Length: 472
Image: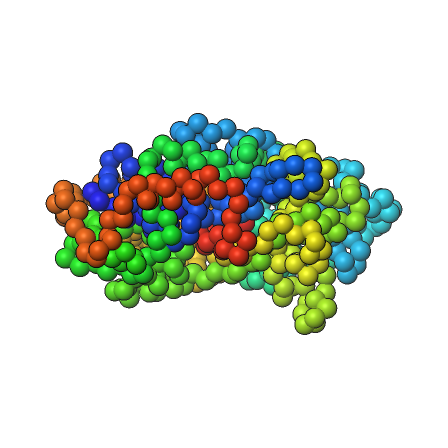
């Protein structure tokens, strides 16, 4: 069959990888680079040149089986990394990193602080109660906030542990985490070993940056990506899917929307009531992301420096409480990627005002799905729209919002397509418009340029509009 894939993030690339041998595929990418949230950039600093990940960063050996299988198939191996989490509370002065005993007591006075020991007890109590709830067969309704209130967890615990950790994982606000669907939250924490002090999964990064797997996939599937080709509209009629770009209209048997749900809905010229209901129920939140070398956004105590560092402070401009603010997280990329450099490379979310402008290397905006009661209901309604009218929808938003989920949702679509009916088109492609089939040599040059490009445009938004990741 002739299949259009809209988007070249992890979902689009996975779809292309698993379909390219059996079908005639074409990937439409609005931007001038391939990869979506897989955004590795090369930076030049006094000590040399380094490849730094700014979007998708890590995966693990327990909850990323489909992504690991994909990497194995294309011959990419991961590099083990440290995953640790710290809190730097500018309001009450607390700093800690849960990675080891010494980092947990990075502030030595906490060795003699009864309140800190009570806090640690609450962490263990939460883990126990959450595991019991997650492992039971009972229907778990309500929100994380309901769970915290039901069991009487203190504000100190909520604000210095579970809410910022959740906000860091899903790039949301602490306030939104209180309203997070409880069942979704518990399943994720249980599956990722976050309710255990030991026996946690081994996390890894991709040597040379996450772009290496993108380059490998493109080198293996051939030149099938049309860069700088945003899709204006998609129309379905008479068993044919028409994809309109500035170059004209091309006809396909099937279309895979491997972009964000809101982007897919905006492209559909003839969206059905079900498509409007399901796709429209999933919202997104923009997060400002800055790559820099300013260590002042990290904990003051170096022993508390972690892979993930959450900073809490009052908003001095609006007077909003920390809970209402977006996730204020810094990834220490020197730790995560094992970089041997005198500089400390950081990727920071939503804190540009705290970063020395002279130390900013790059700036981006990423969008992440907001998980709510409405979005969970939409996830359960996926079969109402997938495969109807020759249209398929894949993306990390169908599951937990991460890279693994992008691959998993793509495989769902691939398996269904391979079992579907024969092509409604003849073997000859049908298109209208003067440039519907752009010159293959020109397109090849664009793809080669995108793969060899060592930096992304500073102003350009890396918009697969995830999953992610942040990051994951």
